[in-house]
Length: 255
Image (cartoon, rainbow, N blue to C red; front, side, top):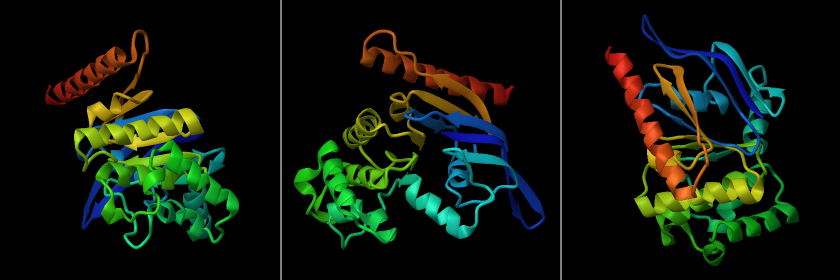
């Protein structure tokens, strides 16, 4: 579904170069829920921005649904972003003058066609994410968790190949964070969504199928969520495993 191969990205400031991504390789399967973790400056947000085509990279390949995206024109990239990628941001990015339902339909509106199929999908998404009763309200009238569920629904309106989520629980309390994660799980289970999430939050990451831990622009570890016993026990064990892996990487840095 999504392949990143030998990816390099360097930022330049005056006469100094900063290598942000160094030979990054990863793949995300269809229907997989994957998180990327790592300290500030590890390259995780830059990786997300390269995948979304908002930041150019020097070397490497990014393939989405069998299409190599690194050589596309700006118009072609705009089509990829609108039709093949869904975006969920930390600060919701909802338009205050539009209702919940209209915000969900926004990518279809931008695409120039709001078909009956899109309207039916918007109503289905409202039901799936438990926001049907507030679909005619405006962002100022709903909670943070409801705003983020609206943002997740909006990301799915054009049936994208992958949802890219940048710190989606970063501004939320624990209850709202769990609501958002439940929305991603619902999207995965009920709609077959593929989700690639950048997060600092080990609790949010513990619900994922796999977690990639970045360190200094490289992939330090990739941990798979093994489900053996009951869901809650396995999630807590996976969260402990994530925290231990991060600690070990930090200790290795100090040595």
